[in-house]
Length: 311
Image (cartoon, rainbow, N blue to C red; front, side):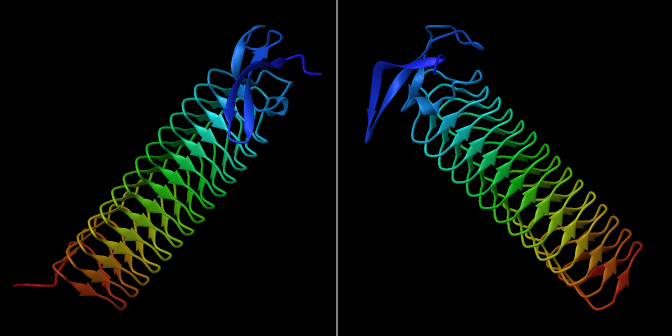
């Protein structure tokens, strides 16, 4: 028996369905007997157990189900097979549909869209024009906003922030305090975590790992099995790929390329159109610039400077 709410005669006509405004039949949570709520297609859209409620001009239809202590407000639309439960809060002009699940203390607001088989839960926040879709998972204390997109099998967790026009997809995983912004793309099986920052037009993909305080920016690419960590910076049009490592305080920029099994560490600076490959190790305060090419089994350290063009 439904002693929580009733369907009123106030309706909204949609193609192939009619939605009814609801009215509370008793006091519960922040709702008082007689309060008018939002609109549902049928009683099954809102659980009769718990303090869940639909308010304002929010609409719930199809096989969507609101239960637990979830609160739907504003002009939100929930439809398809979507489930909203726990203490989730959906507001603004948000749209939740497909087989999406929102639960825990998750907040979805603004013009955000959550759809397909996506899950958003724990204390995650998705707002503004952000989109979460596919089989993506967004959890913990993550913030996704701006025009950011998270889709396919991507996972976002920890305190990570995905903002502006960033895209996370494939089987990528972003976690910890990582921050992805601008037009950056993280995809494939790439991982970005710790306090790492990837921004501007940077790409991190394949099996690459970027973590700790690393910074990837500009039009740079990190790919293959490459690793960039510690306080390393890769920017400009630089490329790091293969099984290369860039770590500690190293800087790789300009059009420089690091590949093979090369290891760049310390306070090293690699710039211009320089190319480092093979099993080369460059460390200390070494500088490589002006189209220099270093390959094979070279070991360069200390204050060494290698300049390619001497003109």
